[in-house]
Length: 500
Image 1 (cartoon, helix red, strand yellow):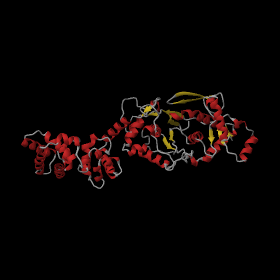
Image 2 (cartoon, rainbow, N blue to C red):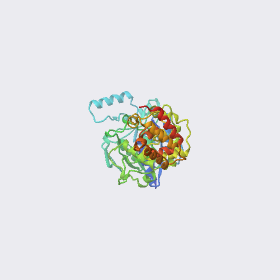
Image 3 (cartoon, rainbow, N blue to C red):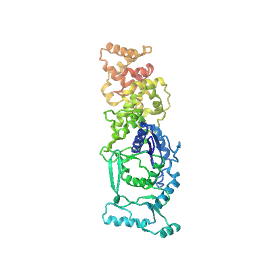
Image 4 (tube, rainbow, N blue to C red):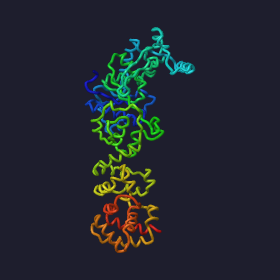
């Protein structure tokens, strides 16, 4: 037994942002480990130096921590089996490759790029199903190998795959799988720059770090025979494999940036809650066997199992993510939303799209709103927003007086007789002392009765005057939140600005 309790890892390459597919892989590993009281490990596979992106490691770590996926061992916190950066483990890989070479399970290859290119063209001309190395350097004599090594000839080290064998393994998601070794190339294990390929480093590290379950994306399924051979060549116990289904666009093509955002940091920047994103990603290829769709992380940990992971691809449905975000936001208390709203107010910039569309938001950044006032807004708008930012964009009138008025509402509700009606109402409001909803409603009813008109002829122009738009929470809620002095001021402004 590799380990009494599960040890799983998320092993991304630092080539940029954390893809939502990578988040799904990390999440499933995390949920599996926590469900079984195991360990979740972060390992950075940075051996492909051509694709290394400066700052990517820090971004990956920040994204994982923002999502709440705290790992038990990793490059920034250490652990028993470190280091957790593959570029710091080069000597380990070289020692293991020497062992394979000594036993004839790997060999030096001195072929030039030109020869390999010619070989590839020849095989393509023969319409062979795939390009494979022809084991040319496996036939070199010991003397030729020594001469090349001593002469400083560039080389790689290749896996020596035996022909006419069956490579067999079981996968938790895919079931029993068989590959013909004739279809498996003599994969490069050590590149000419001395760095290991993914295949070697992955297997060596998983063994030395006592990884019990390898949970990763379906795209790695075709590489698994090479990994299985390495486990067997070293005489090591294989981990349990589980290959997760692909993430798909709505048109069932593979999820890619061409059709929308795929980076965790993009969704974070757009205001998605981490709880909603985790909930959504968890359901991309897994279900608990019921119709439930709303989950918190502790519920996911309790219910997660690999045997409920689907084989078929999972469609990335942005509408569902939006719905989940709204649901998670509404489950939060007003006090939990308060600091989030204050942060949104603080983060307003003149370059934001919202400000370009709603210039009145420019006035917000330099104003201070007390917590009691903001809590009233949160309560009034909670059922009307899906994102914290929408407290600003859907009800800017709570933060700044309207600069303009909705044209359609003006045409429909602002008549020549409207100004004197609002003037009468303004006077009724002025006489009120610390009015609440009931006092505002009574004053409006009294005005309507005195003028012998329906209340609707006052309510709609009043809403337009104080908010600039025709929709929103209850009118009397708006009046109470704004306060009498501000309401009267806005009525006066509307009387001056709106002309019909």
